[in-house]
Length: 434
Ligand SMILES: NC(=O)c1ccc[n+]([C@@H]2O[C@H](COP(=O)([O-])OP(=O)(O)OC[C@H]3O[C@@H](n4cnc5c(N)ncnc54)[C@H](O)[C@@H]3O)[C@@H](O)[C@H]2O)c1
Image 1: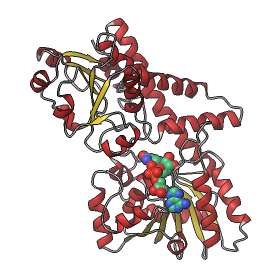
Image 2: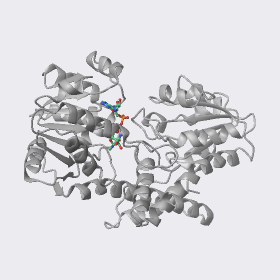
Image 3: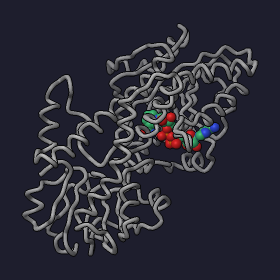
């Protein structure tokens, strides 16, 4: 089956590559010509484990190609996926649908044969209807069907998630579209991936409801961590005690500096806007958004407190900048607010991240980027673990003690063993643990 993917970012490139790996004939399109030129030269625009190898194998097998021409790429494609960004609109938090609509207009202007147009981008309820209107208004005589197929992959584990999803959600309004989408995902049925057919609007909402629920779980345990600190309980034990209950589950119960990333912050905000528009308040999600927003700066203040109440002229080493490990994605990373709080308080901030420093340097020009973890902590007054990259897990406490002036370690991911850190003479603080 010939498939075109419009937008070759984290989702488009991973989805396109995996669909090619299933045996489909895929072209990944992007308006960013430099990105396409790089992909044609074998240079990945993002860091995602295993992606470069999978792209190379499928290019070699002639199942995967790249183009900056939407018109040429959709010719003969039975399915066109829209995988462009839907960031939060500046000022009001609505999902910015301008990229999606531009693509819909371009598809409408160039479509030549019956096509299933699929939104893989996360879009608010009713966006499929809007795309359908754009296609109809263009006067194209070609039969099209608009489907919602939200993506649930996680950056850092994207290929595994795409190939072995917990579920595939297809929101389609007609039999033809359902049949075509069944063909697209047939290779996954062998892995017994459950496929859920719903209405288009339900599929659109499933994505937001899922992300809002996960964000709620994270925020819940973060507030429990604060309470644990006050009552001398251990949030890791509390989370485990809760999570062993199958109705609750252990996942997304890790206390930390607050959720960030390319999805949860913008998707929770967009859900609030949808709820407002339809006069159906989602007060729980509203509270989650507010609690999480305050938390990130509170983590900056936690560092200042660990420094004895003032960060002025103190050197603070930040370990990990990306919103989570195994990605170079800096979008809405908690490190941004934490570092800003420290800079505002007069700290001198030096940071190290295995993959995120290039993107981070553009966002935080006042931060010194170190060449490795031990350079970052050299002469630091405080060390803050913000992102739990594997490379930081086996930190040599002896070396910290030798290098950092007064070794204060603020572990915002509860990665280290408090007893071991303290035995090594480190002044250790974590999240919700004594
Ligand atoms: N990143 C994730 O983990 C993730 C997971 C699930 C869902 N999503 C959703 O998937 C969508 C895409 O997210 P992403 O992280 O891949 O975004 P991204 O910013 O990494 O990629 C979007 C790409 O689309 C391209 N683009 C924009 N307009 C275009 C046009 N007119 N023609 C061709 N290309 C165009 C951009 O140049 C960019 O390369 C979003 O709606 C997001 O919410 C993301």
